[in-house]
Image 1 (cartoon, helix red, strand yellow):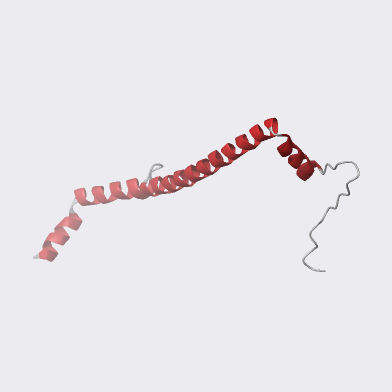
Image 2 (cartoon, helix red, strand yellow; image 1 turned 180 degrees about the vertical axis):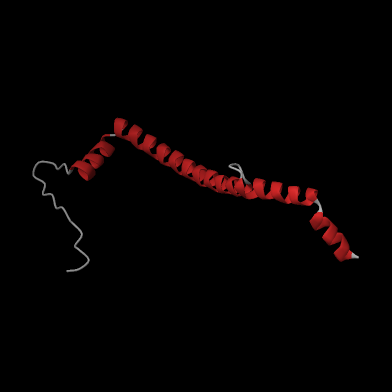
Length: 101
């Protein structure tokens, strides 16, 4: 009895049209389910990157304000990035050695 219903279902054009439509929507369409899942993952990744860059921007803004207002911060920045030294000071530049001596 169940096999007759199944065979009748397999012979039905509506069944095959439905299967074809589901395959088209699920796999072949430019906006298929597979593509939607891929885009959702990419969107989540880009949101994480956006949050990271927002955090970095906030830190850089704080640093810019400190550089504009604080003389100690200006001196520290100049020493670190431009190797500025005071008169009479000796400047030692340390470099990492290569991994294979």
